[in-house]
Image (cartoon, rainbow, N blue to C red; front, side, top):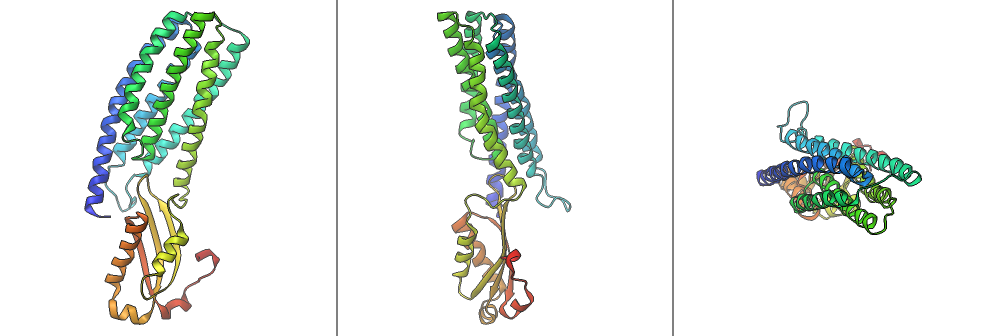
Amino acid sequence: MGAGHQHSHAAGRAEDRSRLRMVLAVTCVVIVVEVVGAWVSGSLALLADAGHMITDAAAVGLALSASYVATLPPTDKRTFGLHRAEILAALVNAVVLLGVCGYLAVEGVRRLVHPQAVEAGPMLGFALVGLVANGASLSLLARRRESSMNMRGAYLEVFGDLVGSALVVVAAVVVMATGVTRADPVASLLIAVLILPRAFTLVRDAVDVLLETTPAHLDLDDVRDHLCTVPGVVDVHDLHAWTITSGMPVLSAHVTVTDDVLASRGVGPLLDEFSHCVAGHFAVEHATFQIEPQFHRDHEDLGPAHA
């Protein structure tokens, strides 16, 4: 990986940490406000939103810690450093979100069956504070939400908080206008429904990285075909691609080259051309190639397992 790419990656992570710190501070303040508001008003939706934000504060703290850990240098035992810590943090965030959804569903149904009194005025006031604060946090994360899976997870959680606060505001207005207190648990159930698909998506993406699934933007047949257009290349096999962490795809391949081209050009220029090929056309900066002379093909197992 080039020095410029590494510097850009490090600078992006530093900016991510700065934004996560600010979001964590705002979230902790809102948690206190909403817990007080839930106690004063008796609102389940407000309490659920506060509970959701507690898990978000823990998740953002975890994401922040993982981002720091990811800056630690590689070692002989961990040659890619600890970049995967960000993926593990994203997976934990997603599991926590699923747990929150389960709690909201159970408690929401219970309160639909057994309605409880709600003080709509205080509920509305505290929900508006949460709405404004979550909007500010979301704006902090919006610009960097695609920089890593970790940041995307934090963005989705804060977005869920914003939607949750908006639903609490709507529920409070309904209770004030009609006296129908079931609007409060209905808002809680809607929060769960909105969070659930995003949580599943985050789980899927994190598991794909941990299982070293081929990155979504790569078609290995296209990569193989493109490498085969390099003069002298007769075969590409043992082609693999995976992701270390968000924004860090990795590729390896065995490339068979004619004896004449290998003799005339040498290994160095061929490696440069292969690297430029996958970096320029497929955005893979970290690639490893094993160049093999054509006469060596009989020693290679080219069966389906290595295709």
